[in-house]
Image 1 (cartoon, rainbow, N blue to C red):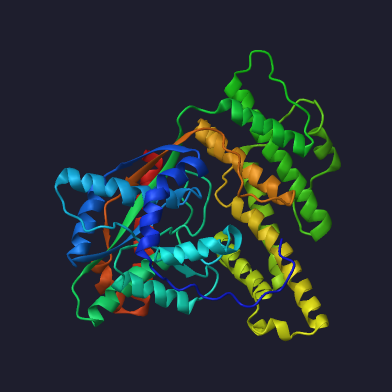
Image 2: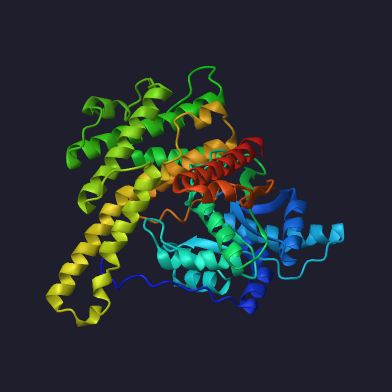
Length: 470
């Protein structure tokens, strides 16, 4: 929890250090082994990347790897792909690639805030460049633009903009990746260069090596206890899968009731009534009668809107755009209250001024909490598990609720329980040419806008196709 105002966030310039990069390449297997539940990583179509790197090193193309972002472990899997699998397949195919095989990562400026200053130091030494997600970050955009056109390695970025917690649902993509692609084409043409610019979709999904049903049941029991729910017992002859889904759905519906009541009573939001009788019935052993999936999804959407309004009203931010757009603007608004441009010389403040600045920062962090709750549930549909009741979907949904419980209890959501050993599957998609869309882009402002939208949609479709087929 942030309790003190701070000077404005400084840009972290890329400071590529080959020694740091080589050290990470050596240590990566150990990091994956001891920091994650991943025990095996495999990839499809690696030869596509081999060919792209070969062309890149011959100055024929520039490209960006647009990877899915279901988990915080995704960058480690991307590293394994580039540092291990691409060189291996290149050797098998007799293709000579100049080491190291690497990519400049475009990362969220907020990562060093929650992951620690070391991560900012590390990302910089790996040639990464940060971007503020909720505003026009001119310095960050200039850096990313320069690296795309002139960096010694290709680029890598997550077009979803944030982790969504689902291997098989792709969040709406942000158009910034497409815009970067067109800027790269423009910069190359101005420099009289002929490289073709491409965006390469990369699917990432996770599967449990052995379905961790016992761990999922234990986590459900833990969350039920935290929620004050009475233990459920299966009806006679009820299948275990059906019973487990009933437990998960009841927990989600109870959480929905609780949060509706919370925002209605204490923040005066207009929400579907959550009566005391309704809440009490979920804490007893009375037979559970679930609401429909459609009602659940509709009420969840209204609840998320209300939570965002609570934060937007405090920061005086207009509720425009998608839920993700609103989250980004709120994040930046909170940072503007905490990391203040007018406090570059914070040590010169009087005790009184510093105290007031701290109060503003503390309250901004508290209001941003509502946005973080929403961010965790952006991709929740209400029927994700019902459509395909696999261990992965049960685990992903249960862990998202664990995240929310952790935030409500004032604990970090980044120390998630590991339910079982996992394998990661990466799929390299077919490159999408940005250069071939340049004529439409340069035609007019309207044409540029449409070209960006069309490219973003093609990338969205490619990632969604891989997500459902992996």
